[in-house]
Amino acid sequence: MKYLVVIFLLFASVAAFAQKHDDRPLVQFTGVVHNADSTDVIVPYVSITNTSFHNQVYLSNYKGYFSFVAHEQDTLRFTCVGYGQILVVIPSNLNTKSYTLQVNIKPQIINLPTFHVFPWATTDEFKKDFLAIKLADDDLEIARKNISKASLSALYNTLPRDAQEIQSANAQSMHNTILNTHSLTPNPLLNPLAWGSLIKQISDADSK
Image (cartoon, rainbow, N blue to C red):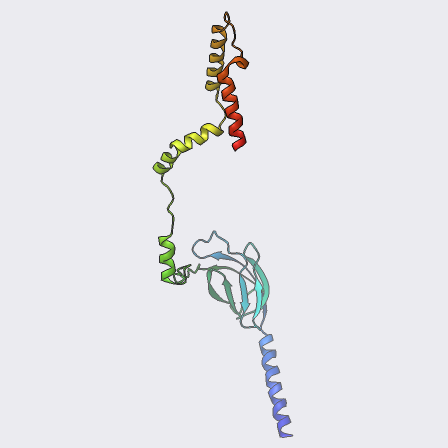
C-alpha cells in the first residue's frame, strides 16, 4: 500500500508539472531564414527543432518562410546543411499572440583532410607501368610521319585524282589526238611487244 501511495504521488507531481508546462501562453512563431553574411540571400529548407517541447521538428519552405505554434520561452534550434546551428528563445510576456523574427544563420565551411588516390597496389607495379608507358608523338613527329614516303604513297594509291590531275590527263589525251590526226593509228594486235606484255600479265596473274 505504501508503494502505491508513492507511485500515485509521483504521477500526480508529473501531471502537475506537465500542466504547469502546458499553461504557458501559445504563440504563432513566424519568420524567414536569411544568410548572416548577406541578408539578401534566403536559406531554404531549414530544420527547426523545438527542444523545449518534445523535440518537435518543423521545416521552412523553399523561400525560407516558416510559421508554427509554440510556447513562450521555448528554445528553437535552426540547422541546415552548410550552415552553423543557431538557438532562438521566444520571449515571454508578449503583447500579442504572434511573434515574428528574421533568423540569420552563418555559413559554415568545413575543410576536409586531403585524400590521395593511388591506383597501383605497390610501388613496383607503378615502376613497371611507368617504364612501359608509350608517350604520345609531338607535333613535329606527327608532321614527319604525315609527309613520309610511305604515307604519301598510301595516300596516292587510295585518294581519287583531283581536278588538276584530271585536267592534265585530258590535255595530254587531246594533244595525242591532234598529233595522230593525219597518221595511221597502229593496230595493237600486230605489235609483238603488246602481245609480250599481255602474256606476261596473264602469267603473273596465274602465279598469284
